[in-house]
Length: 362
Image (cartoon, rainbow, N blue to C red):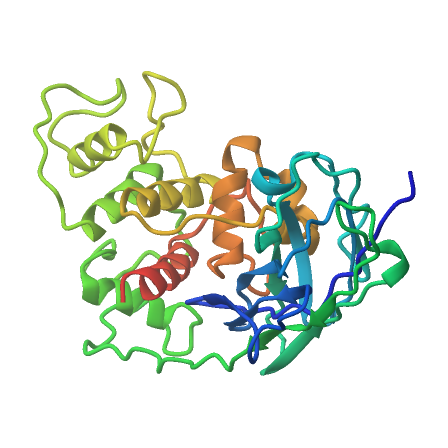
């Protein structure tokens, strides 16, 4: 059977802190059969979904779609076919790099003539993408496009547009308190983060005038930080949560609370690891568990970290989801490697925590 094809077109990529995907096309839709890419708006550094739609559908039995987009600004992350409409006779593209070819051959016998979304594509927008409208070219070869009656069909095409808007930077929050810590210098990269968390009552110092710069963050202190951020919820501790966690300590209630809420686990069923310095991937795992417990969006594309960070392969399997989420949301890996199995200092923990709370709990 002759492969019948259709070349697909211009998509609008929208990178968004708050993605606006209205699945619209510019102007009025054509009244003849058409392939339409949806128009979306977004911001640099975000991901966006773009629909490929068939309008005035005469009943297409097979498609061959060609996508051409600006790789300097956009990165195609995934392609999801509308299997409820076209069935499972699809071929994932060999490459997601532009130009991309999507194939669907020998469609179902009961072909629909309804207008439909053929596929949804997920794009990641570069952090460096300039504010502009980015096109993904849409075209097809008439000799490769047929309907259910084996008739050659002419389709109009409408380019999709991904409009990248300029991301408005909120002014950096200023602290209303002076720096009480003699070990936090006025020019230290972590100063504003330390004072931000101190002001919110989340992270304190070793003493009134010493923060503990250079000291590693312990596992019990990390759990205590997220417990404070939740408002210090009270729970009845009727037994030690782990054999190495005593009743009546400052960290007892936070660990018990975090364990019962699925935010943290121990080294094993009986040992929490009290007194141990927390490694970076475990620090992020706790923060990820806290974010999920608050109902925050913890999804990730499962691609950027491995593509952009050479040491991503060192991340343990149990921490992959949480590390990908943290990386894609700018919490870690900003100008540095991931270092997943290194311990984290109190000042570096403060920087990541401040990024998190400024992003999610403004």
